[in-house]
Length: 155
Image (cartoon, rainbow, N blue to C red; front, side, top):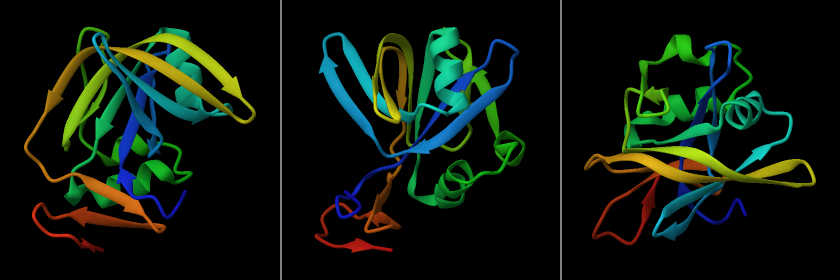
């Protein structure tokens, strides 16, 4: 699937102890429009998954093209990722929202399915915001930018 370019998001959640957690995710699916629902695929050992299931909510932070370093940070094993980025608690579910975004969706957990080493997390969108930013893409094991009107990807 590395040859299939896709948008890049950071999925975030808040633990019961008030600790933000998050990870870079390119496994995001828009499931339904009415009501709006999103599905993400997270590793079963993920702190973000545990927090989302425990508290009943997660946020999808869609990254803009200029946020490559944020994508790399949240894909790393760095322990305190949130100390290196601007973020705040936002939305009806009071979830971590990154400061530099293409879009944001807050989701209430509806269902969870475990499939081998990942869990599929289905969420009902409770809040959404989109900014007119160019989204960050990932494919062929590199980050890229889509230029509307052009037919090529530039790394």
